[in-house]
Image (tube, rainbow, N blue to C red; front, side, top):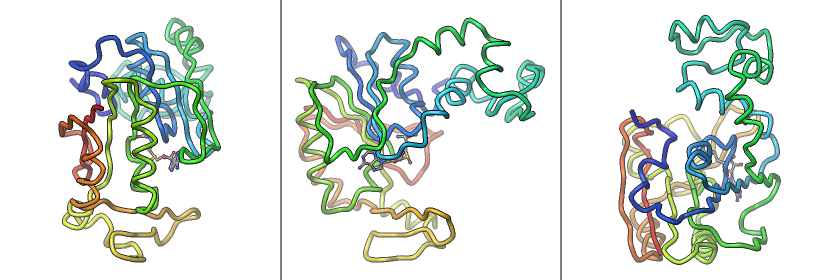
Length: 238
Ligand SMILES: C[S@@+](CC[C@H](N)C(=O)[O-])C[C@H]1O[C@@H](n2cnc3c(N)ncnc32)[C@H](O)[C@@H]1O
């Protein structure tokens, strides 16, 4: 079974000798765990600062295939194979350490080299990468910055490096009604109505998509039935 976040399997045919992976807009770092298992050096980057504490719960989900999604007192729910087992009594760290000590040991060794509170456009990098993940991030970046964002990624990729690019497509979002309840600020720009911290989406149409993909020598679209239907997903190589 391909897990929804297990991109490493999808790009596996291209992965020989690729050793450094950077996840831009990593949030809770979930995409990086399978890369760590493949011996990659991990680098994670996000503009916000609230995600670090969630790494362990994401790791638990990853290890146990989403059967456990929150701290649990006993592992009987997990052993019974119940999804969403959650008796919020002990914290994730105690849970993992108590019931799965060897997974806990592995988790403690994982280093995401996480940099938070840093906008990718403004950030300085002192190395290049073999794989860059930009998954559900670009549609939070203003349209006028998309070109700069992608050219910076291209410059950060080693020769034959891979960009995994996933973004929300204007056409698909319009046809599945995802944005119906949102405020339409301008063409392709939508803002959430009721949220403490409303997000603004800068959706990509076919033209935006072509401009971005045109920067790369090789582009292959991929699909996974578990992923959102209003997203387009590409492997791009320099
Ligand atoms: C929807 S989340 C996607 C998280 C992760 N890539 C995933 O697929 O689970 C979008 C993330 O992108 C980050 N982000 C948005 N704009 C960014 C920027 N300019 N530089 C770095 N991170 C950014 C946000 O803080 C957020 O954590």
